[in-house]
Image 1: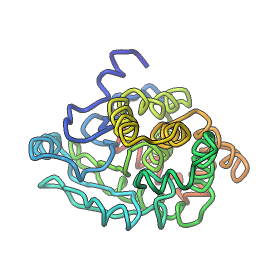
Image 2: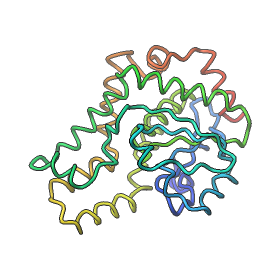
Image 3: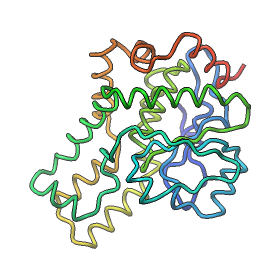
Image 4: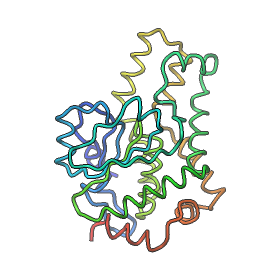
Length: 268
């Protein structure tokens, strides 16, 4: 993927974090993902009216919320005017811990600066292995398959737009035949696009006198890492051999589903 293509990923959203276009990525058959069809992002709760209007004008017609009930209660989505809200909780609580307070983090992470990194690997293993997560990601594909109108975008998100959202993007791009290197590049792009948000959160906690252990762990929670994705892929390998098999066996997608998906989301 070129630098220019990377620059085109981020949407000009000023009141939210990690809003990205998945259009333009090339599948291995030479086709490309259509623009204005699939967006990924962090939470929608902070969005101002200008950004909501932008998303509406951009074509956002479905808002898929992958967060747990507590996260939704704390920060309900602001939904673009013409979008339909779909609630698909990958976990029954926020395993990613992106919604925890400083006090909660201090208690859990004191004395172990690597705990956050290891915790996130467990989260990624769970996203692949848990039956409920598989069911939710299947439902995510059902929503994608129903969105057959060109220019009508499905936006999917969690709190930070990187873990539950990241795996949804991995599954989606795999289903379309995008190569593994490009998929990994898109996954890791969070660390570039969300850098201002990550740095602001860490600086905020420094000002609150957070311990070095807490800051190290929080960086692990706020970022993505090749280890996290590798852990998910290791679990996929154990269960199904590879991602393509997992789409069939784990997420219960048929060959017909995948053919339909490619017809809807790839350029002719």
